[in-house]
Amino acid sequence: MDSLRRAGLWVASLALIAFVAGASPASAQTRGDLAIVVHPDTPVSDLSFTELRQVFLGERQYWNANVPVVLLIRAPTSAERDAVLNVIYQMREPQFKQYWIAKIFRAEMTSPPKVVYSNESANQLVSSIPGTIAFMAANDVKPGVKVLRIDGHLPGEPGYRLHLSGK
Amino acid sequence: MRYLFAFVSCLLLGAAVPAFAQGDPAQHDEHLAVSEGPSIHLRGFTDIDFSQTDDKNSPDGFSLGQFAGHLSASLGPKVSFFGETSFTARSNGFTVEVERSILRYDYNDRLKVSVGRYHTPINYWNTAFHHGLWLQTTITRPEMIQMGGTFQPVHFVGVLAEGTVGPSGAGIGYNVGVGNGRGSIISRAGDAGDVNKNRAWLAKLYARPAALYGLEVGGSVYHDEVQVANTTDGFPELITGAYAALTTETPEVIAEFANVRHHDRATGIDYNSQAFYAQVASRLTAMPAFKPYARFEKMLGEQAEPVFGDVSSQTTTVGLRYELTDQAALKGEYRRMRHPVIGVVNGIYVQTAFTF
Image 1 (cartoon, rainbow over the protein chains, first blue to last red):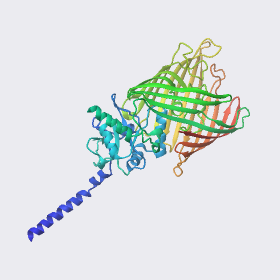
Image 2 (image 1 turned 135 degrees about the horizontal axis):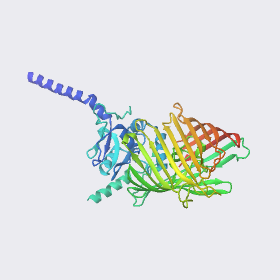
Image 3 (image 1 turned 60 degrees about the vertical axis):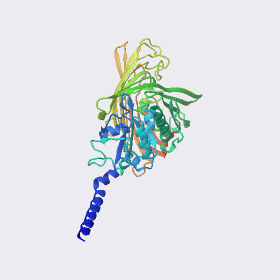
Image 4 (image 1 turned 90 degrees about the vertical axis):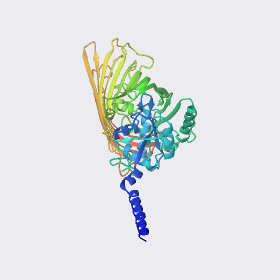
C-alpha cells in the first residue's frame, strides 16, 4: 500500500514538474518569438538589431562579395509579417509597398523581396539557397537552417526582442 | 547530384517564391517560371492634372502628366540594367525621351560601378522622386528641380561609382561620377557628347543612420563648364548642396539647399544663385488616407547672372493628399508664387497620380 502511495506521489510530482516546465515563461517566449533564419553557409551568425534592419530594408545587399542577400517575406495576413512590419520596418502595409516601389525606382535594387506563403516553404528555401534570409515562428524552425542571434540573443533567451505579437 | 539539387532548388524558388510583382504582395504571379534570360520588373507612373491660375499667360485646365515607364532587369548575379522612358504631352503632340539607361556592376555593397544616363545625384528630390509623381507627396517639384529648369542639371551622362563606407550602422553612402555635364541647351544633359572638353564631375556623401530611423542627410558637389550660346568662353560652374529628409510620414520633413556659382572669365566675377525649400507633411493617425502638407521655397539670384539670369522667386504651397488606393493618390493644392517679372500668381491645382 505504501509503495503504491509512493508511486502515486512520484507520478504526481513528475506530472507537476512537466506541467510547470511546459508553462514556464521561457518556453512560452520561445513559442511566441520570431526567429531570423539564414542559409547555413551564410557568413554571419549574429546581427545587431540595426544591422538586421539594414538587411531587411535592402540597405545591405551582400553578405560578402560573392554572396548576395536573398530576402524572403511572408505574404500578407500572417502573424510573422505583421510582427516584422511593426518592429523592423515600422511601416503599415501601404508604406511597405511604397518603400519597395521607391527602392526599385531609385535603381537601388533590381527586384523586391520574394514572397513565401508558409514557414515550411521558408524553411525549404532558406536551407537550399545560399544567401537567403527569412523569418518565422521560432517553433517552426526546422533543421537545415541557421538561426541568427540578434543583439547576441537567440529566440527564447532573455533579452530577445523579436516577438510574434510585434510588441 | 549537386546540379540536380540546384535545379530542384531553382524550380522550388520559381514555384513557391513568386516575385513580389510590382511591389504588390496581392498580385503575385503564382506560375512564375524560372527562365534563363534576365528577370525583368516593369512599372509605370503617370498623372492627370487640372490647374486654374490667375496668370493670363499660362494655360489652364486639364493636362496629361508624364507617362513614365520604368524597367529593371538583373542580367546576372552582379550585373543589372535600369531603364526609364517618358512620354510628355506638348502643345504639338508628345515627346519621347530616354530618361535613364544604366548598366551597373555590383562588386559588393561598398562598390557599385555603372555607366549610362542618370538622374543627377545632387541632393535629394532629383533621385528620390523625379518622374515618379506618385512617390512624392506634393503635386509639383520644388522650383529648383523643375523639369526643363536650368538651376540644377537633372540628368547626367557618364560613369558613376557608388556604395557604402564606414561602419554599417552609420549607413554612410557615396556617389562619385564623371560625365558630360550640361548640353548646349543647358536644361538638357549632353546626351550626344560633351559640348566642350571639360568633363563634369560630382561627389555626394549621405547618411541613413540605422539608429535614427527614416532620416537621411547628405551633401553634394558638382562641377562643370557651361557653354552658353553666342559666347566663346565657357562658364565654370560649381554647385554645392545639402539636404535632410525624414520620411517617417508622421511627420515627413524634407529640406534642401543649393548654391550655384558661375565664374565669368571675362570680368573675373563670380555670380552666386541660391535656392532652398522646406516641406512638411504628416499622415493623419486617425485617418491615414489623408496627408496634409505645406512647402515654402525661395530662389535668390542676381540680375547680371550670365548663364541663367535672375532666378529669384518665392513660392508657398499648401495641400492635401488622399490615398485612393495603395497605388493611386488624389492631391489638391493651393500655390502662391511671387516672381520679379511675372508678379504674384495664385493657383489651384488638382492631380491624380498613380503607379501600375
